[in-house]
Length: 615
Figure (cartoon, helix red, strand yellow):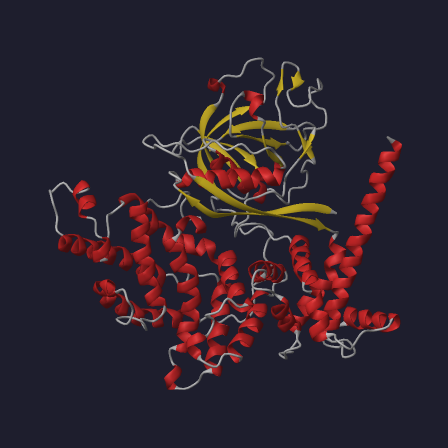
């Protein structure tokens, strides 16, 4: 059994905060520190020209502790999910319908993520999404409202695209997003927001008029938008096969539900609504959230991205709202948008023109391709040595590359000679106490050779806490399945013939702190973990247990022998469980897991009690 913590940190409001990256640094520090149970200290951001009060920050922290049981305890629940998706049951009492009914608006996002990951691991994600989408399409009367709500189907499709399609998104959008960030153009179309003073500060030609600003802005935006659309519409072959198959099935379901020439655009709008409105447009608006950039955009670049996101959204809506909204100042871009809509239909036709109807085989626990560089950048390194005095000169600046197979480094990005550590030899990746070297933002990478008994330690210093957290997270994700992971480590360093953390003199002594191998900054690249995903899903189902009983099991309370009969039917086959409805099978699975948790908790209390008596 394992215990993991899921921590959500939400900045609910802040005012007069002078540095946005300072706030991000605080939140990231708080998140990882809470996960690792360490003390949090916030260095307050202080810009050079800031005067007066620093401002205030309210942070909402949600900590949920999950006890992950051995895999065998989740098999009934997972098997029930698998058989329900493979069955032909489309009724309102099907398990898919029950899951949607039991999800609250607050839990729908997390449930969608866990369900998608469970079915990805089973090779049934596209089949699961097709079931959800079919239900959503069949119960929609007005095609204009199709997938406009945050239903379980919409949320699941959105999460599937992020998990499976993020490398595709990066390949398509990263070059143009990088150029926009580097050029930092002053772009504005809204007459109410044009700042002539700002334009004078950035112009070498003296004063410029409002009309000149609008004309230059239109040219810049047309250039950026054309590049974005060209990159997207030429990316059919780059799109993951699973996404293409999913869109092909969605196209078929919508066409069957809304036939006829009057509904020709509905099947296109359903796909573009996901691909453009929930995938490309949000990534353009906030590149940092989609890992396209390490930092948020400055105000000028953010405005450019917002205007481009609006245009891409209009294209995704097939230009239906052009000329009818309040933002008529966007009209100079309307011809390009309308032209792109015509090309979009051809792109979607080619996107769903895939011959394979078979879903991809089970995904690896990690989503990284071996040849992909996951993370790279300059860091300071030193190898463990029993020295008395450690100065900053003992840390050498090196350029690091991380892939799913190796962690390599050299003197510079273009240096021909590289040293490397095979990822499969990494045993632990942990923080280092600041007092070990009198240096902040440090981590250690513990690795082991095939023939060596002891471990090799490489100490790494990052430039800030954000970079530290990102490297910790990335390294832990690629090494999660390694065979020789360590349960403990030393957060200090071995200096002056002893460990600075526990003062032990034996260099090979067992670590004094437990490792945090599963603590990562949760995102699309997190490895699949069926047990953890099933546990979180169980927690949500447990909270909705009363809804299940009152709505689907009222008046059908069973005796002990009937309950045993239900478990027998549920364990054999979902299709053949005529005596036990999907609701009863789900109830049985929830009860079994609830009893297993109670048994483990009782055993833990007894062990603690026995230990107390012995001491």
